[in-house]
Length: 143
Image 1: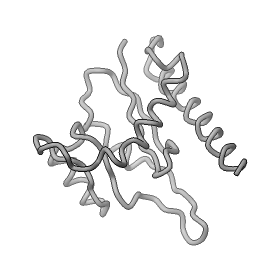
Image 2: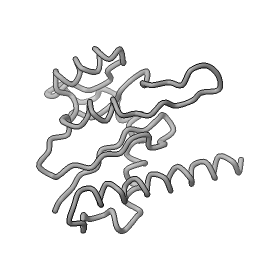
Image 3: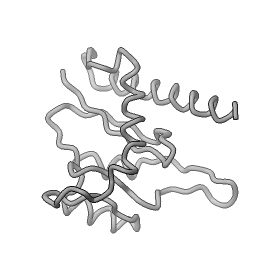
Image 4: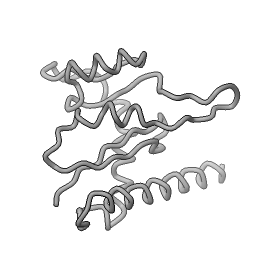
């Protein structure tokens, strides 16, 4: 079984939400569901944030209905529309997500989908996300 991973991170590359889908699911289909499932994040003071200020992704997420749904959620859409010319500048910030995706690739069990069910594959991704967050917090504590 071939599976894909979809990750929403913060600006530092901390994975907030991870989802896995079968290979025949297009990129934009789980995007809104993942965006809505971001947990509340406590800041230094005030109420926890429940949604990001902006949502960024590659052209695989740039369908008009996804952009409209993101704007309807009062989130700034930095999604590159499909068919637009390249050079939008998103690659300057998107490396954060690509780096996080490569961190998931460091776990050999996640390189290929060996699991018989998607639930098990999702559980291993959740475990890897926990270990990635632990590594990030450990590194930030060393400074």
